[in-house]
Image (cartoon, rainbow, N blue to C red; front, side, top):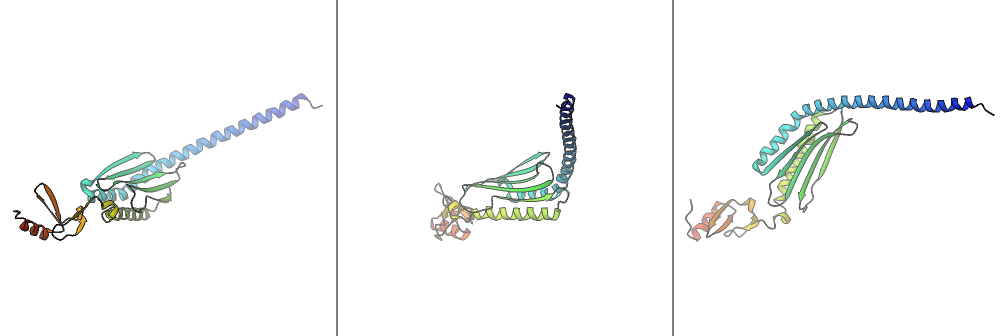
Length: 216
């Protein structure tokens, strides 16, 4: 029969092994936390550097749309985000550009998200690109953003060519007898409580002359 002290030694060895594992785990977690904190600091500096790329591009997009767009920026330590809400009578349009990292703070991820409601045509709702945190290609970032912005503008302008979106926004020139979207009107005229739309000033003047309306 084995000695009881031998069993006690075996049990002590098991408890000691577990304690060592716990200690190693704790040390590993502390090191991982320190590494993550260092990478978070690196990410913050990277966001500041990349702002030189995305800020002027997003400002240009805002300028081109004037008062038809509302921009809402959002900044947290691990994320940079800009949401654009476009004023349109044809659809509700939300565009979001995001820059963020993964859980382990090892990647930079750029994201493009577009929502158009109602969905009556095909478009790209989401796109993203990733870079290792320590090897971000600024030229590739600029190129990717340029491509996404141009793609969005093309999509936005295509709304004005889509019959489904325009079905409640079509008008007819009373002289030329052609139908076109209101946004494409070359001239308008208020008469007898009604607004008339024309393809150009020439048909507007002809309509005024025909109906003996004095115009400037």
